[in-house]
Figure 1 (cartoon, one colour):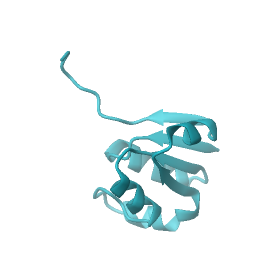
Figure 2: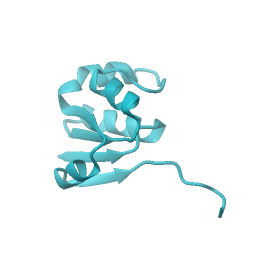
Figure 3: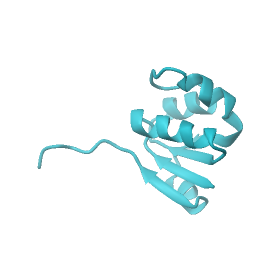
Length: 89
């Protein structure tokens, strides 16, 4: 399955790496160019035990971009994994 994940924080990156482990192709989308470069190099932008190993092992199934349109239009499903404010303002 082709999966896009908007947001490469803890929820997004860990979920995507696990989906890749089960044979899915993942496109991460983020506005942070540094995170995009790290993910495309197999480097995790956060620390989670064994996460970097997963990113490296399934590197061929994972890519990152800042192009929302490309990611959404070329995948079967999109997960939005961005921070949600807890206050009204």
